[in-house]
Image (cartoon, rainbow, N blue to C red; front, side, top):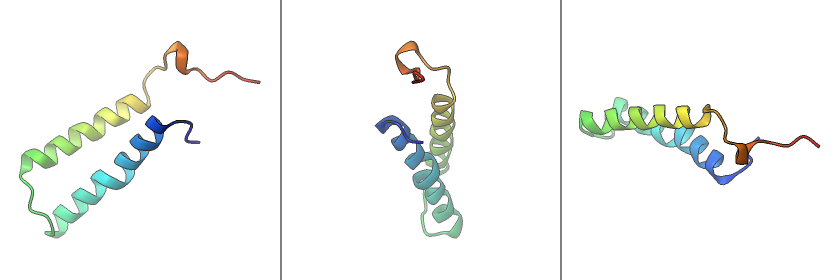
Length: 64
């Protein structure tokens, strides 16, 4: 479940924004340089690393 804005933003970027850029590039609707596509792949991996990182003490979920 999405608990805060950071998780929502990471989910939107990782699932909607970058894959749609890759699909549009593959279909020939966008003509971006390879550096831009490489940058999107790098940012996608950073988002994944952020999402599955070790959580800090202030981000732990307390059980009721």
